[in-house]
Amino acid sequence: MNKLLLRYTLYILPLPVVFISLVLGPAVSARQLFDWFVEWSLRRPPDEAVNRDLLRAVLWDVRLPRVLLTLLVGGALAAAGNSLQALFRNPLVSPYILGLSAGAAFGAALAVTIPWLPVQLAAFVFALLAVALSYYLARTNKTVSTVSLILSGVIVSGIFTALLTIVQFLTDPFKLQTIVQWTMGNLHNASWDKLQSAALGIAVGVIWLFLFRWRMNVLAMGDDETRAVGLNPEHQRLLVLIPATLAASAAIAVAGVIGLLGLAIPHMVRMMLGPDNRYTLPASFTFGGAFLLIVDTCSRSVAQFEIPVGVFTTLLGGPFFIFLLKKARIGWEA
Image (cartoon, rainbow, N blue to C red; front, side, top):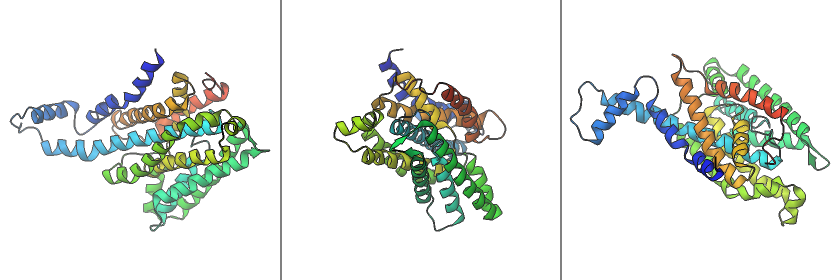
């Protein structure tokens, strides 16, 4: 397929997926929603057998905020993963691998336990701390190797996961249930309030990354090339690292830990479109949002009970991560 056509296909992919997600699900069928929409658009006399209040409540108060929140969360995690992979010149890097997810999870859980601590702020601060620790531990002689970065990320993730376990052990049972469900990656509590709380951080982070996406191309060429064009590589890394952490932590604070999405989606997009971040960043956002929306729709539709969306993404992303370990740089130079 022509790359230009493929690129625009990825850009508009969320539109049909959003529509399908809105009409699929329990409680209200797609046929009921279609009949109600036709009745409303054509100004037909109301059908007494159709509970219009129920349809409106399900569509507007339940499904729409969940669909929009899922789209933003998936897009934010994929865009952050794309940016971090370009930043560290490593296709195996992701918010999950670098410890960002574990740091944000600990911060958000701590905020749940301590009422006066803002959830978004705590998630962002500890996510940034986790990424900074991973990078610092991996840096040797002004270079960061693939193996050392992955190992340091595993260590930092383990530390913050242990701290999260301590918070779970010390908190009361009512809050513990909330934290445990949240760590599985869940969107069943989506609401307009949660969408509003996450939208600002995700929007600021993603727009910031979009404006700086050309700098990622420069950083991906190496420090010497970055200095050759008059840019300070350390300063430019911060200008990418901060918004990537902001977007990912805002998503994790409302949706919990959704594993390996930020690893698999950017790599898939890069395999389709090439390594140019001017195109892969927006495509990662739209494709990541559409992918998570498909997974979430399946999680709430295929069974009588709802399966946490984080379970699905980990089961799908695990084999893909093994594939990347075997073919570490496929799609990076292409």
